[in-house]
Image (cartoon, rainbow, N blue to C red; front, side, top):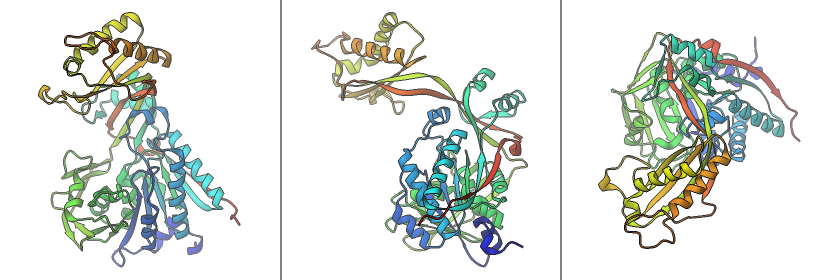
Amino acid sequence: MTSMTSMSATEHLLHSHRPGLEALRVLSASGQLGYGIPAEALARGMERRPHFMGCDMGSIDPGPYYLGSGEMAAPASMVHRDLTLVLLAARQAHIPLIIGSAGTAGAQPHLDATVAIVLEIARAHGLSFRLCTVSSDVSDVLVVNAQQAGMLHPIGPMTEPTEADILSCTHIVGQCGTETLRRALATGPDVLIAGRACDTAIFATLPEMLGYPSALALHMAKIIECTSLCCRPGGRDAMLAELTMDNFSLESMNPDLHATPASVAAHALYEQSDPFEVQEPSGTLYLQEACYTALDAHRTQVSGARFVPRDQPTLKIEGAAYVGARAVLVAGVADPFMIEQLPLALHTVERKVRQLVPGDWTLFPHVYGQGAVRTLAQAQHSRHEAGLVLEFIAPDADLARTVASVFKQNLLHFSYPGRLCTAGNLAFAFTPSELDANAAYRFVLYHVMQAAPLEDIFTIETQNVSFAPVH
C-alpha cells in the first residue's frame, strides 16, 4: 500500500478528501496565465489552504495567428514569472496544479514550450514532481473523414471548409473536456499541463472525481476560470471557491473586489449567447434555477444549477491556415471632405495601385470612426476625425510592404472635391507609417465533431521530474 508521504498531490487529495465532511477549496490563480498574476492575492489564496489550484493559460480570443503559427501570445518573461509563482506555491503546499490551454492555443508547439519553461523553473529551484501532459492535436485526415461522414458542424457563421482547406491548416486542436482530464488525473500527477482544454474542465474534473455533483462543479468552474472577473469591480486576482454537495461560495483574494449576487449572475453572459444554457463537451448546464445569495458584502453563495449529460461527449475543433505576409498602413484623416468620401477614395486608390503594383495582394481596410469596430449607420459616422488601419496581405512580405508604401503615397495626394490643400490628406503618428505585421492566418475550423475518438486523439504522457535541491 502506498504511504501518504509517497503519494502524489492528486493521489493524496483523492484518498484523503471526504465530500460532505469538508468543503473543497479550489483556487483559480489565473484567467490567462502569462499576463501577470497579482502575487499578493495569490499568497492570500494559498493561506486559505486550497485543495488544488487551476490556471487557464489560453484562449481562441486572440485570433488565428497563435494557433496557426504555434507562437505564444503572452510575453515569454511574463509566462516564466507566472509559472514560477504557481508552480512554487503548489509544490510547497503539495497540492495538484492543473494548467489548461498551454501556451495560448494549446497545439503541440505551445505545449512543448510550456513544459520546457516548467522544467527550467524546476531545475532552477531543485523541484521534484510527477508531471502529466495532454496533447490536443487532431489529425487533418480525421477531420476530413468526419466532415465526409456528416459529423462536423460549424459553430456560428463559418464557411464550409473544403478538403483542401482542412489539409492546409498548420495546426488543428481539439478542446478536451472533463472526460479526458479525468484519464490524465487518474495517472496521479502533481502537475497536469493540457494542450487545448475546455476552461471548465480545469476546475471541474477533480471535484467530479471526488463525487461532487457535476452541475455544481461545472457552474463553479465556469465562473472561477476567469478569476475575479465576476466581481465588482472586475479584476485578475486569484479567486477562491468553496464547494459543498449543495452549493459553492465565491471569494476574491483581493479584498477590494467583491463577488456580489448581481456581478456573479451577470457572469453567465460571459462568452455566452444564452445565459441559461452552457454547452459543455459532456452535456448541457442549465442555469434557469440558479440561486445567488450574498453571504456578506464580499462573498456570494451559488446553488440550483442542473446538468444533463449527453450520451457521448462532443469535441470542439479549431484549425488555422496560413494566408500570407501582412503589412499595415496606419494613418489619420481630419478633413471633413476627405472623411465624407473615404470609401470612394480607398476604392479609387486601390484600382490605381493595382495597375502600379501587379500581383496577388489583398486590401482589408479598417476605418475607425466609420465602422471598423462595428457596423454603423451613415448618420453615426465620425465627421471630425477617422483612423485608417489598412491591412495588406500578399504571398511575401516584400510585396505586402511595397503595396502599403505605394498605396500610402497615392492616398496621401488623392484629389477629391472640396480639397483645399495639396500638401497631403493623411496624418501619421510615426514613420515609417507602414509596418510589418507578422504572417496572416485565418480560422478554417471552428466546429463541433460528433462521435470523436477521444482516447485516440488526446495523448496522455507522464514523467517524473527530479532535480537536486538548490542550496
